[in-house]
Amino acid sequence: MRQHVVVLWDEVICESLIPLAQRFYCPYRDCSGLLMNDGGGDVREAECPFCNRLFCARCSVTWHSGVDCEEFSKLRFDERGREDRMVHELAKKNQWQRCPRCKFFVERKEGCLHITCRCGFQFCYACGAAWSSTHGGCR
Image (cartoon, rainbow, N blue to C red; front, top):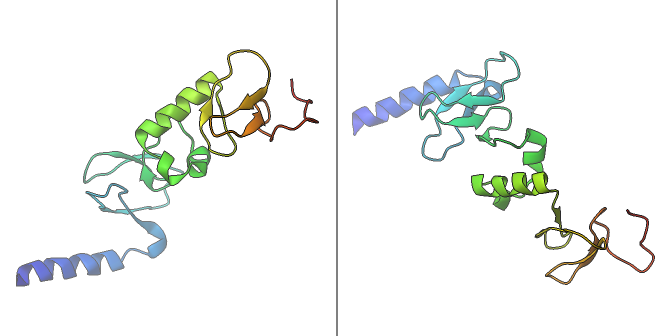
């Protein structure tokens, strides 16, 4: 027990020597290894030296392939999983739109731009604005 406390104390002392602005941690919950940003350029894709998994050094989150950092930051927290990002890639490829109210993806194959979502909200497929009798400028 005593040896364990000494090891932990040693780790805390070493960690405190790294300036706060330069330290960050592996984003994987089962790792959380201490890493240091030595200012060697703008690194995006990085590999944790402890668990050997990829993460985004710019965002300090698990790797978000196929989605740039700005787009990733706009995703809701419940949409940031790997499978969710795959759906977003598919939606982008197929040019699907999202309902402005419930955020459900909608695909329009043909016909009018007037969409009635499954939640009942009516919107323009082209611009995403709420549908009204005066809306008609989108083509």
